[in-house]
Length: 207
Image (cartoon, rainbow, N blue to C red; front, side, top):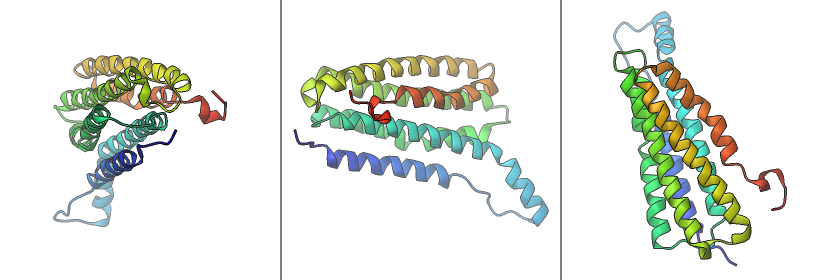
């Protein structure tokens, strides 16, 4: 069967690209009085929270895109509700630079706990939107290219997303008490998502 999702995939890829670009644009050191070679190096080193939040968010967006790409690889067509649910995913992805900038600006301050909790909670919200999209697709098997192959993968993806949402919820709560530990846990979620989004075809194994 011929795929009919190319326009939606192209639009989605564009939004992901914009989100990643905006993450990078948030990094920088504004011009300041008394700038010199030595104190500029100090300013660069002092900006490490921004670098950390950028790399953390870049990896997160990359893995979200990987999962999104694989979802659409299984789709034959997208109806009204798939388009709307996909738009909801993109809405949250496009705004991801906001919690990223927030956590980058407030690491090391008295507001660190709230910033990290907001960041982890927001990432969990993105996962919820992906879960909603997957559940709808699973309930509408006629939209799939090869249901026999796609349904087991979708079920595995949904299971991973439920675990991810629960994990981000726990991380959000931890952030109010141990912000550094919570921030490290968001970093370690990369490993989880790298495994959760894996498809048998990634190893060239026929399904």
